[in-house]
Amino acid sequence: MHLLQKHIVDVHCSSQLLGKEIQNTLSDVLEKDFYPKLELILDQYTIENYEWEIESISLDLPKITQKDWRKELVNQTLFKIEEYLKDHFPVLGLNKTKEQLENFGFESQTKFAENLFFDYLKTGIIAENSYSKNIDKIVDTIEISEHFIERVIAIFEESKTTLIRFYFNCKESFKEKVNTEISKYSTSKQLISQILKAFFYSEIKFSSVEELENWLDDQNIFSDNKDVQIKDRQQNTFNENDQSRTLFKFDKDLLNQENNSKGSNEISTDEISLNKGEITGSNKENSINFNGANEQNLKNDKEINHENVKKNASELQISSLYIDNAGLVILHPFLLNLFQKLNLCKDEVWVDKKSQHKAVLLTQYLVTGQEIFFENELILNKLICGFPIENVINTKQKISKEEKEICNDLLLVVIEYWSVMKNSSAEGLRETFLQRAGKLSLSETRSSELWVEEKGVDVLLASLPWGISMIQTPWIDDFLHCYWN
Image (cartoon, rainbow, N blue to C red; front, side):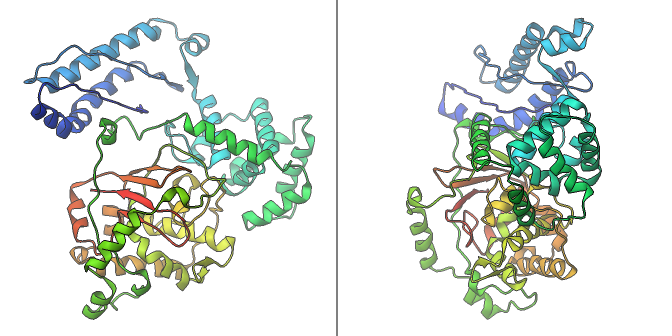
């Protein structure tokens, strides 16, 4: 698989008519014609068990004719790229030794997997250019060498967050292998290795992140400011990388286009029932207000000075993150009642931290219907539940039968409210709308934004009885601006 981190097309047109044509069709031209051919070229430079990266390529194309602009744009761009690759990566004619490959910027998949793993321990996020979004598959590629163990010990000593994430969100077989190897090596950092041994050889079992945090604090091995320092480095790392989805997805906003989201009416979350079959005509009339008052409220919301909204000082400033559960925002009016019904929060306040962890997992269960969770897939979930993006989620919590039933009932209630979906099932709602790709832009200085992948079925969003252009839950101070259709 080949990944395109960023693709900017700057076209100077001879007429406004041609400009509009290119604006409306360029995305399809790239996805259907350009990217498949580019993949064939890049395949020639693919070397098994190695990864390689080109920081940037800037191409200037000669003038193209208006009549055949599609064909000429694709062919001339591919020609320029192939010439660049021949000049800068002439490995096809070489013997492809390890040293030669490394000189040309190739990195072994084992080393690449190590770096992905350590970045994940720091952030809970898997880099967009990863060959897998499953941390269990990534660690399977890692060679547990002495050098790797030394890096593990060093990162655990640097930040207790990495140790907590390792404990809760890595599979048991991998943790056991790491622990076995740690016990073999004599290192100057013996103190941290002894603590690791205590994890796996003692009777201590930690059921929550807070329990483990307290235990680590009692060991008095972490300086007060080390985690702050690592978070600062995380910010710098993410600010330097603006990654995109895959080679086959084209970001329309990179054409300097801004899509205005449709105006929408809002539904009062206080009036929503989570009990299926209870939505009578009068209930709908009371709970869904289509009068001018809501439009005025929405207008007033947009005029809020977001610079004065308090932000979490520890929040990671990340330019772009790509997710597969962007459709979760459709459910935002129902979440408060769901969590209150499950006794996870009271008066819009979480009962405890464990309840907030459970809430994050439940929002993902609503989207997927699956009971296995991976932290890197929970970015939007954390945001909606007011959970700091960089903090560790305990993905090992179990979803009870009652919780699953209430979540499934919620989806049926959504379908009842959304009349055009009345013949759909909970699974149909998940597959059609909730499991949707999107780009999430987070910032400490402005409102967060979510750009959702468009599909033809999105015409049904026009009949959604509540707004999704501006999302706010009781647990986040600012609005999440959603751009969908």
